[in-house]
Amino acid sequence: MRISIVMPAYNSEAEVAESVASLVPALGPGREFVVVDDASTDATAAAAQAAGARVIRLSENVGPAEARNRGAAAVSGEILLFIDADVVAPAAVVDRVDRFFHEHPDVAAVFGSYDDRPRAKAWVSQFRNLLHHYTHQIGNEEAFTFWAGCGAVRRAVFEEVGGYDARDRWFSIEDIELGYRIRASGRRIVVDKKMQVTHLKRWTLASVVRTDVAYRALPWTRLILQHGAPPRDLNLQGNQQASLALVACAGAGVIGAAFDARIALVSLSALAAVFFINRRFFSFLRDRRGTAFALASFPLHLLYFLCSGVGFVAGWVAHQTERIMGCSDASAARTNP
Image (tube, rainbow, N blue to C red; front, side, top):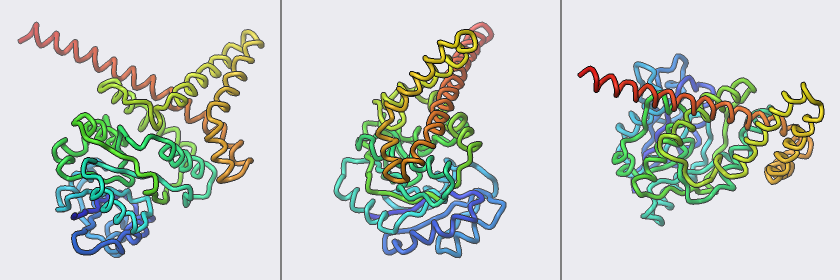
């Protein structure tokens, strides 16, 4: 079974060489590797080529979704394995993908997760990557989304559903949106929890807030409102939704405490409930990084839910505005032929 690795890269000079080098040993008969340089302004293309990948250089920046589409069109494999330029994937991942599709002919796509050894040592980066790892590891194996950080899909299915939707509205969740369409076509997507890669990305508080609000919660809310929510899994599990509601309650309690100090108990009770609901996650953090790290991560987890709530509201408003504008346009079209 022919496998083509497709890696989009933009200004990834600092990471792409190591990312490419980790996969080159897996190449051989029936396997190819292409890096799509999305009009980088640094030496990304040269670094990727020197590390052993074939490079396609785009003349204009088109974004990761379209870069992946261009890469898929330029390769011939029956299986398209998408890997991000800021991860290190063991060469054995390619063999694992090959074996998986041979053993599961009824599965259209498979994806893995980050491992629990993120390279960036700063507290925010460690927390963020461990949260992603934990979320994928406790999720259902039968998935309703897709992840392009390390995910593979049968070319026939990829082409049938139209590849990645490169419109701005799905920016940064284009892989999730692709998963929705694959599932809607009646195909299976599976999480292989042993298919793990090391994340190289460095997170800051600013990048966390920006990503969670504008690039995750907002577009994902629009996707859910447009297509309907999948079964509760990954970031949409019931305990996650309950935690979001409790954080909102805690915030309201803080505001109310300005008028009645007794209302502060509402906030404290809500925060205690959030900690209790997520106790398994904090136990996981304690086991991996110690008690002090786990306790210090509680405010970051609250920030995660707060950003998700803000993004949800923004996504709901955007969706309703789009509906109203669409109705207005349709009405105008009927009255002004």
